[in-house]
Image 1 (spheres, helix red, strand yellow):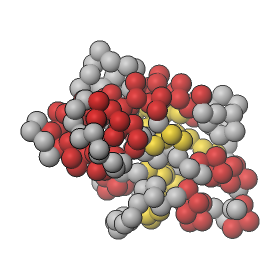
Image 2 (cartoon, helix red, strand yellow):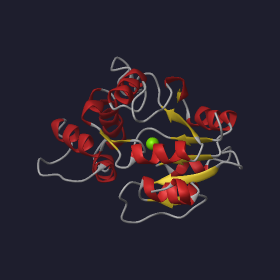
Image 3 (cartoon, helix red, strand yellow):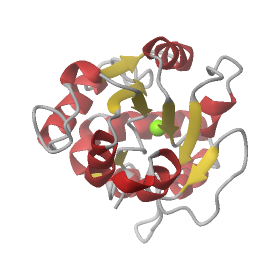
Length: 210
Ligand SMILES: [Mg+2]
């Protein structure tokens, strides 16, 4: 494999916005008329009494059984194709425990994610073209960062700016924050983008883009 671009999974490749709202409502954490994506749900739930625990349990339900209702982020296949055309390999590196701390008897989160990737054609010879062996799940953020370093990624794309602010984040890896459809982009030690095509424009040589 040539030079590698590393991608986060949750809320980068896969979007859970509708799932957060739907499951949050079914758990009685959100009013029935609530509309909003993950950031709004998080804000609302964490402001409740015992909000952190409620938010953790909601996340466990969303990233486990709720994954069936999640959507592939728009433009993902086109981005992956552009990367291949430009001679880059793709790896997915995700901070995801086997089961959620808030729901230890619940769904195996890694199995659920692998099955979702296969079903959506990201792996298994589908149009996404990602090798099953090129998907890494790590138990802590530090392990994730260590994996990004050991794989020697040229660039990494993530929706969580905290990842790029970690002191251990490897210096040579170019940092790309992707907040799909965001109104406002934060600034920090990263390049910030709203879409996969913006990431491609920043990362890939012009002839391979479209
Ligand atoms: Mg993420």
